[in-house]
Length: 182
Image (cartoon, rainbow, N blue to C red; front, side, top):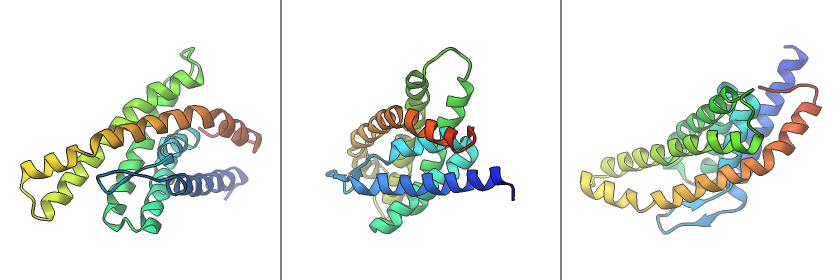
């Protein structure tokens, strides 16, 4: 393994750990038995700094670990897939906007909003599925899960803001490690 690959792997592990910590450290409970957290900012940062592929893995693993450690076992597989897709889309869009004359904050907002829409829709579908498996009627499942959508939207918007604030700092730090990771 080359030094560049080792640095990239170490950064991916570090970002996965930071994603788990950001998800777990500040939890604002919601009436729908979930919680709002700052981890979505790190999910977007994973996709941007590591690139869509490796960033998706780091984001999915870090977010999944937060659910696993936090006792949200039923959400572990869904969280892995949803957060990985969020990072994948966010990172892909961010890098597609390179060279278009936009500043970092504009790019974060333009990539973060569609990525967080994936998060909101992903949890909606996953939670409706969980309700159906538990025996709820389809209409009741949809109605019950709709109550959590506004909280997921707030979480997603907080993630875009956290990413816009932290990306310049973390991006500069990763560049100082000897490489710009894309």
